[in-house]
Amino acid sequence: MLAACLRITAYLTQDLQAQNTHWKDRFIQYRGAHQELVEVLCLMRQRLLTTLEQLGVVRRFEITCKASLQRLRDCLVAQGAVALVGFRDAIHECLRRGLVVDGDASIAMLEDRQNTAYVCDKQVLKQTLVNVQQRYLTLFSKLEVRFGRLASHNA
Image (cartoon, rainbow, N blue to C red):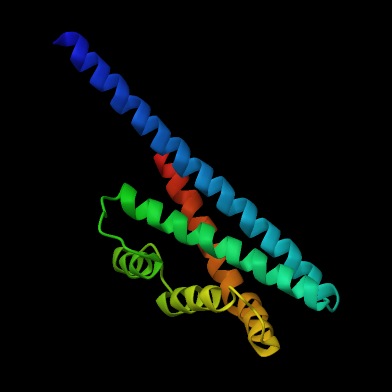
């Protein structure tokens, strides 16, 4: 009986360590994606970008957006939320719990990410670039600060 309890305890400890590592890995992934987005937006402020470079900015936005949404969902799961179907549900739950303060920008960010999956319309491309610069970069920066606080609190 004691051996079985020790095996279960060891298994649960490994599972918690794996979850903790997964959480930290996602945070590191998010920080890297955010930093790369900041760098490409700085380049965009310095000069006009070609269409191909603009598509690269949109791709950086998509990656950062996905990483932020995954990280938000991780925070919710760590707080005990289990019935999250999609990112929209996660955003609404984060608003309810105070993890996100600008719900409109978060939902708009999610919609822009979905709309840019196959960017063919130049107007959609231009509007997304404007939104990333004027709205979402600030949101991503606030999320990084929030995630950093949560990471130091859980360390």
